[in-house]
Amino acid sequence: MAPQTSIPPAANVLGTIGTGICWCVQILPQIWHNWHRKSTDGLPSLMLMLWASCAVPFGVYAIVENFNIALQVQPQCFGGLTLIAWGQSLYYHGHWRAWTATLTTILVAIGFAVTETILILTLRGPYYRGVEWPMMMMAIIASVMLAVGLIPPYFELAKRNGRVIGINFVFLTVDWAGAFFSLMALVAQETFDVLGGSLYIVCMSLELGIFISQIIWLWRVRHVRRAAKQAGMSYDEYIAANPSKKLSRFESTETVSDVEACHAETVTPIEKCIMKPNGTSLGADMTEVLVPDNNTPASHQKLEKVARPARPGLAVM
Image (cartoon, rainbow, N blue to C red; front, side):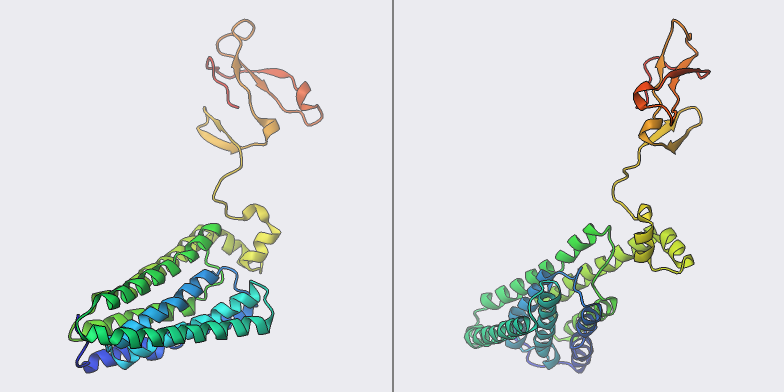
């Protein structure tokens, strides 16, 4: 694809909204959220590093393709702010010393800036002479890194039954809006860039999945949250005081079905019924049932006759 020769006003306006307003500030709520919580738990540092890294090939692609100014500045803002959040993860989650985390973040930012400058100067000439595959590789690498960067949060969601922890929803909303308006800016240009647009589509889709996961989790724990509110406690405080209310992916409570009443009741292991036929003394319509006695050891429990229809060979363990 040839570089853009002119930028329509609509593309500039949409690109300014998406980048100059949204993607220049979208990480700021997350940075404040990290500082306020003094924690980055639930916000994967791998995601932040991949996002910061993808700004390099994305910036090269946007500048060499001669996108509107807002879209050329976007990767620089995106990468710089994401590196700050990454530095916070070194300090809060990695327990690095403040000066060590700060110095590391600055050195990585300088390395990214130098790499991007070298790539721009190296690839611009061949691209204008018709060699397009290096720029296509820049777009593909940026797209893959952006998409892969949004995968680690899904592992965090899986560990917490779909609950979003550590990711600020203001950041997520503004980031999604920035991707949307930036995508519309590409649509408004004279020629739509498929590879550039794929960056925004991937970002919007995966971020939408995080929203949906949180909504599903809120629905699943609605009764617990209501009980916590009535108790004047937060959800986490209520769960800490009532561990049995915690949402679990696997049900560990043992249940025994009452076949005749067509319902199940929760019982403890000592209360398990062992039903077996006894044709000599009870007849076909009688069953021996283990009746629990809290004052007698389990090994000395006795079978008592209970008038209940028995099924040959049936045993509920």
